[in-house]
Image 1: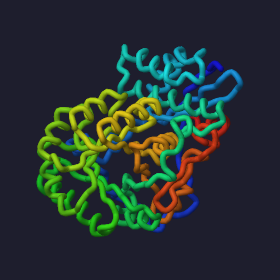
Image 2: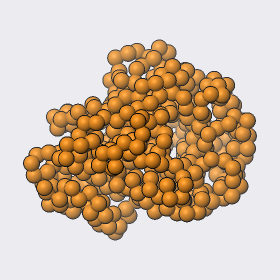
Image 3: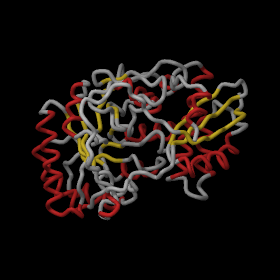
Length: 395
């Protein structure tokens, strides 16, 4: 069956919880550290974290009217890449030929760079194709990947939102049943020794609050340098963090090598801002990291993520999809791949006191219960979305 239409539209998604948070929002909540942290005038502007572009929804329709949905970020340029270029490659293709179409998209975008924004576009198209394929075959996507490898997925909560206070968020995560949490640093090299000490204090307080029977991870969101990473990780040893994540700029593979050389026993994780398979292959072959963290909506879609999972197995590494429990795309990947044993719930998880059910952005997305999740067994990714629902959210 052939593909007859590929559409890309900017959409705005927001949770609409009915439960009021049990604590007030802070008026001056601290921002997590970012690559722009060295420029104080931009730290509180939001510019460092927000582009102003909406999300991109990709809808691919087959001859019989069956359609699949993919989702990604950065609608401004990404929607244009899909509509103006990738659609011309995909329309007319066999909707079952996901390998062929992924390879075609990798090659046709090489002229302007397959990584980065083009990778976001490829991800939306590829995930829409897998959703379509599952719907046509009337099977969940995880079965198309080989079936469920595990009964359910162990999930951790990432405290990306500090609006209600980190201590309140961690308390809520524990109440929800999470047995692992991740905290984000709030200071970088530009903050000198005072900032370094505050980072250590943040992790120390988190460890004291969650206790010794909950795993604790630390994320630096691309903001440090080799010297700072080494110094900080040495200071964090008493707090037994499971891994240290995303510590230098993603393209700076030399610094990844330097950090690994100087911290041979520290478990290191990254990959949300690596695009395509090649950076992961290089990192695996050179022993740069222990945990690969591709984002299924950014890295090149499910087709790229599966390749990365197989690569990790070949090198004895593990994979955790970035934000993988937020949406069905990462849930189905995680259910099927042996190299994935954990799943991340991020995007703020939920304000303290607000049930996770009220934070779902895409109808049909299964919710974490007591720290574990089982994907939907409905066809495709199991989304319960109509084209009218998408049009209502188009901007």
